[in-house]
Length: 253
Image 1 (cartoon, helix red, strand yellow):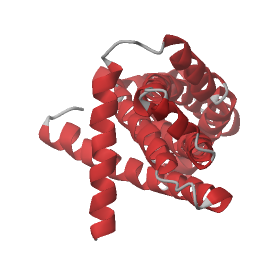
Image 2 (cartoon, one colour):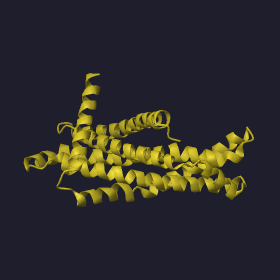
Image 3 (cartoon, rainbow, N blue to C red):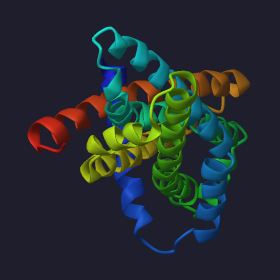
Image 4 (cartoon, rainbow, N blue to C red):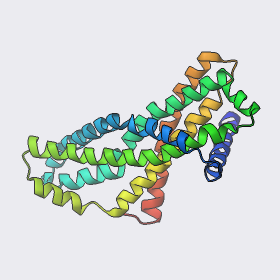
């Protein structure tokens, strides 16, 4: 329990410090753009692939389940609610936690082992400002963008399954989908995606900074594995808390 709460406190302090420094000059525009490319552009093919097959899976499973109740005509609404509110943003977040979160941890962990972070401190360069803030800003910007791509291609994949495999009317599918699509749902998805991006960046950076120089490559490996697992668990916790807050307390649709 002591180790858990100590780590939670340090991660919270790192988060607050990073957010504060993000609004203070000098701004690391070049470093942030580079991280945006690494986080967003390079991950786009993977996100599109997972989005398409998420849509295929949701439409196929949903159709067969709804058919048991003679309600297969509502598959459009089922796809809209499932992809826009949950799977369209949770699945990309899991992918990014395993891809980007682990990459950040491995990179910063290697810098910690090779004493490059100590060298930055000797040169009076704040490691949090130089290393954490660009990654935090990049993940906060790019994860919502990737989420929108995932949702769009997920709906496209579901549309293909419904039209080609189940021979349903495409116009009816879109009409039913739009009837369950609210602007507030998209806003909630973006808010969730930003929260997931912040979590992935903070967990990755915290795990990387926590590597001891005496642990060597073995410590980097353990931290990298722990980063992906911890980020996924935090994403699930945040998803539950935001669902309760936004839908039950604030009354979003």
